[in-house]
Amino acid sequence: MESDGDLGDEVIDCCIAHGWESELEVFEHLSAGWREYVAAHVPRAWHDHLVAGAPAPGGPMGSPMAARVPYRSPMGVDLPGVAGSDYAALRDQHLRPSHVARGLLCHGATATLVPALATTQAATAFVRAINDWTRERWLDRHAELRGTILVPTQVPEAAAAEIRRMAVDDRFAAVLLAGNGLGKPFGHPVYEPIHRAAAEVGLPIVIRAGGDGNVEAPAAPVAGGPPGTEVEFRTLAPQALMTHAVSLIAQGVIGRHPDLRFLLLGGGVAWVTPFLWRMDAEFRAFRHDALWMDEAPSAYFKDRFRVGTDPFVLGAGSPATGLRDYLAVDPELAGVLCYASGWPDREYATPATVRDVLPEGWAGRVLHDNAAELFHWMSHDRRGLSWR
Image (cartoon, rainbow, N blue to C red; front, top):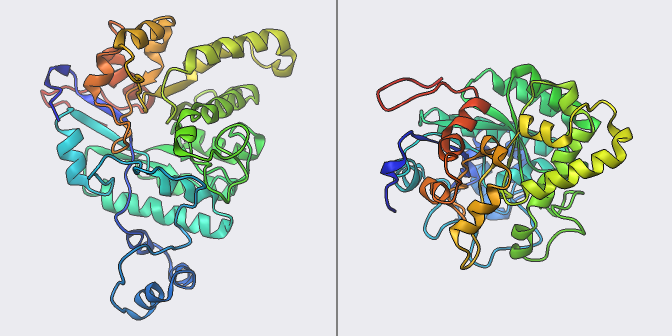
């Protein structure tokens, strides 16, 4: 992988999909009662290992925390030979050559589906263990990384308690809403305890597309029901982000919490401008549904929402100038977009790849400034100024 040494300012990466090599890493952070629960729901050989200390049998564990999705990528979702559990690979293949000074950990597919597990008590316990695992295995060992607080979205009061529990550690930089266990868009009033807690502790909310792909979740990640193939899921990922964004605006969440900010990940960037055009048009026609709003929805969106670049897909044979010209239709997007690599996803893009497609003058804001403002991180340079 070539170095991005000519980028100038160092980079902030708003989405690194970290994961575990084995679920046993997370189980270490469960209480004795929940470890017993896990042991009762795995194959006999794994049960004997967990309960009686028998040798680990190898192969899949099939635990109640495992992701259950109705579609699979035939090639795998990660870069060949790269696992999200390997910090050395992250450091050597991405952080160092791309000059990433700060990276936000946003979990791989398995963890993002856990909040939607049908057994809500288990979902809550597993989420707590995952957050403790992130802190111990990643944040305690690697100073350039920051975490997101995964929450059990289908139990909003428990989610609020988890936000307050983890927010005392300022290495957690955001709240992550993923698995959608209630089947309602995230602006619905049922989630108000989550909104209130995030606003109270001063953390932005991250929403990742695809977290509602679990077969047990009542919500579908796209319109019309769960996709049957990985290509359908990937192509339609922006639909989930549109749903949550318009809900948060129209349901008045941003009015009730004027300091709350949002980061939308996993849908790329090409959907934003036409979505805002449509939302403004419908607001003008039906504004009686949102009388609290005294500006166009696009103004609220550009002030309160940021959008990650992952997946940064140019399309087969599409020239870079096409996407650059498309983005330039709305110059205000320069203040909305944030670099998000998605590493080690197959659609991973280096900062140089993103920079080369951005309109002139956008790179500094997209690769660093917008995220630094969103997360309230101190400006820095290579002369030794420290991060917050």
